[in-house]
Image (cartoon, rainbow, N blue to C red; front, side, top):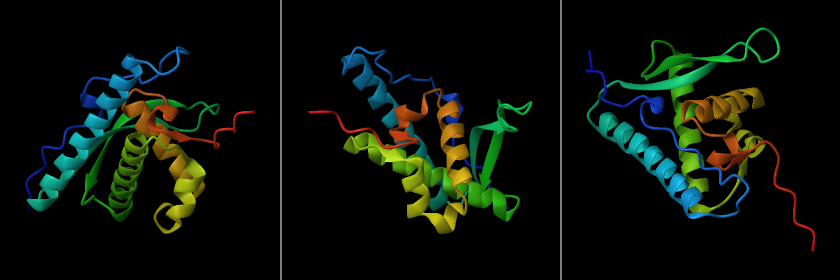
Length: 162
């Protein structure tokens, strides 16, 4: 049996809110985005290192308890493993890593992704749009940021009027 990995739970590092609070681009927003990118890079590097050593991977994720507005909507910490105890758990781990990687790339390049775009580019992995929606929101809650701080939005930004 493989030794558990040292992958730190996503929520264990300090939270960074990348919002500039309506002040436009600011140094604090840039440094907060840089800190968020650094957190993601640490997670991805740790996962790659653990994989190269053949260790089990574990990530902490704030997962939603039921649907909002139906007596649910709260979050609880959930451990997601790879290889998982079941195929769905391993699949969730793979989905989560892909979303972290896509968000990282979007933050670094300054692009904005939509949840719909993520789904249509990876339909075989996600199977349903709702899976992307929930994992993106859970990742944002885990990292204690807003979804758009991940450069992932529900709808594309509206073009600015000339």
